[in-house]
Image (cartoon, rainbow, N blue to C red):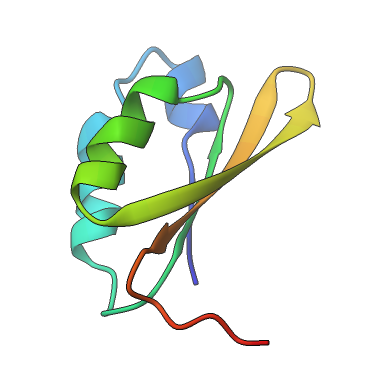
Length: 78
């Protein structure tokens, strides 16, 4: 699973979209992306869905969110 934490860059006023898309492009087939952000990235959900990713969101507290984007075609163990 790839991990990207955009809290630091966003605190410095940087736009994280390019870094997020670069991380998505670098994923291996079936690999999920774990994103940590200082807000709930709602606009990203539909974009990622259009690219074949579902998501699970967890509020971490202090305004931070953990979102795991998983390819829809990834097999589910269980």
